[in-house]
Length: 89
Image (cartoon, rainbow, N blue to C red; front, side):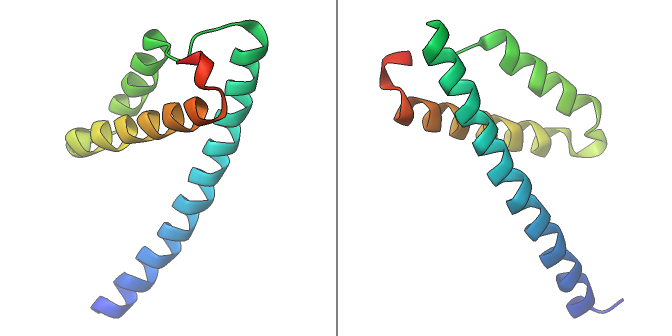
């Protein structure tokens, strides 16, 4: 396989990542709405640890990178939730 074929495959994966990321943000909006309606705080450290643990279980040799990736996803989700409902923070 030459480099252009590899890059084409990366482009396909990037498209799937973007679609999944946007769906995750939409779901995060739903979580924020629920938290707002039920008077729940923005942060749920236990849930964050569960997400990181699940990711770690499937990360193999890429654990460090997977942990960083999911930490950023969590941070961005919380940022988005805080933008929508600052009173949750």
